[in-house]
Length: 104
Image (tube, rainbow, N blue to C red; front, side):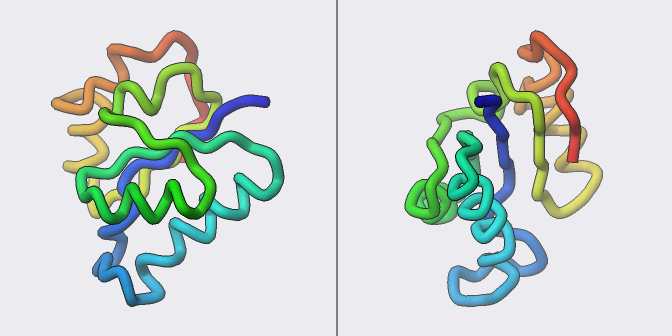
């Protein structure tokens, strides 16, 4: 089955571990995993990544590693600057893409 990648799991609209804002991306990860879609996750904040793994994803050490071979790329970051950085800057995702994924 095709892999799905999620970046930026914990800081969406506040990102505290105990807030509903944090659980929304994790619900997505859990839902995809429960339906049999392998999810590859990355986050700069280790507790967020650990929570995603607990919800059913696999962890990645870098954004580029997480993006390898995915058909759907879900970026859950704060703003356009972070999207640009993940894709074309330090994250190096665009340079590592072998196929064009659906970007969400």
